[in-house]
Image 1 (cartoon, rainbow, N blue to C red):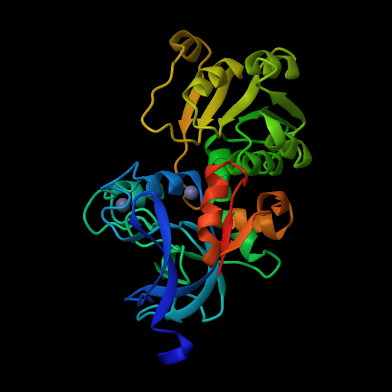
Image 2: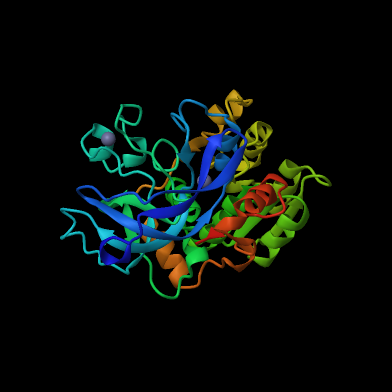
Length: 355
Ligand SMILES: [Zn+2]
Ligand SMILES: [Zn+2]
């Protein structure tokens, strides 16, 4: 043990060969200037992590092996690095972390859109869990400016959902969702189930969920007003029928499935918005040009969550967003392989590894 009870070594799930995570003892990272050493308490594994582990983004995410993944996590402050005295953080504070802070200097960062930092591909830029070490480990180092405090009523597992929840807050803001909106959401995975609840919190009175199976049923439990099983009904016709023929004010694609984009564009009302939250792995989608032009449809890309963490933390703290059905699959770090398999088999909406 070194100072303040911080050990020299920690357990981590290390990606050493593509295809599998291995539990190893590695050195505890050291907080540099402006950085904070965090004790990780809960870390989710998501679809992007699966692709990273499988080597889908080899050479970029991660740039090289070995690598520690994990970007949807919560924990507490273990030690403050030099120059963090004015961060407002103290050892023991419960926190969540954004995965990058932007360079702070490029035109996009300076306009507040640091999710679109123009230096993201330059050497030295850190996207934690993607190009810099993630949090599927007992400890992780982050810039103090990436951290947000979490109040006591939000559990570690619930706080690990802030990353994805903040993305849906950003989506709701991009779509300018307001009181009385009729919304459709495609894809009741973690993202869609959070989008549904955040849309309701933003004032949507109707949320039509398109999906299938148990996850669609979960959407009903979490406040979807209309459920459309795409195996038994045409989503476009069902959304039109549920909105009196008009179409939804806004459609959120949380599936990342290219055919859904065309369906979403045909499900939205004139002048409506289609927000895309999922990645399609390089695939392209059909665009009905005349409908987009003549109906003045807005197609919105939604990336990351600039300025959205505080709002998501408040929604969880107030109990407006329910997380219990979303955090049902929790595993100790020693069982990370099972957590990974449960996501791969789609048995868990979001496996959460606890430390
Ligand atoms: Zn993720
Ligand atoms: Zn920047």
